[in-house]
Image (cartoon, rainbow, N blue to C red):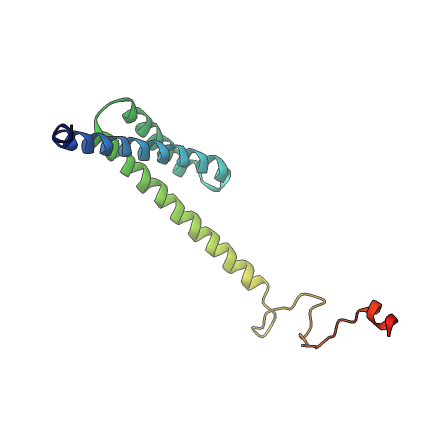
Length: 135
């Protein structure tokens, strides 16, 4: 049995690799669809369409047995989604920078929210009223 297992080890390794490739591609397609739905209008139609096409390509490749095609469509989808993610990150950073600038007071100091002053450290002692009554 051991020698038979060793003789089929290469086949098993290739089968495992094929399963992992297929699972990774299917997972990426699912996650990409989910992200597109969650992001909604944050992605423009001209950027959303290539990702949707790449997802469809991955789904189509998964119907067949050509691992190279699956790998190629997986890489294509990953690159397209990464590009859009970078754009979204830049937009978020730009809007965060703009809102930080809007909160700045004249003279370059940050404006303090109302009701917040200097912080004062203080010591306190917890007094147990029950103990004081017994004394």
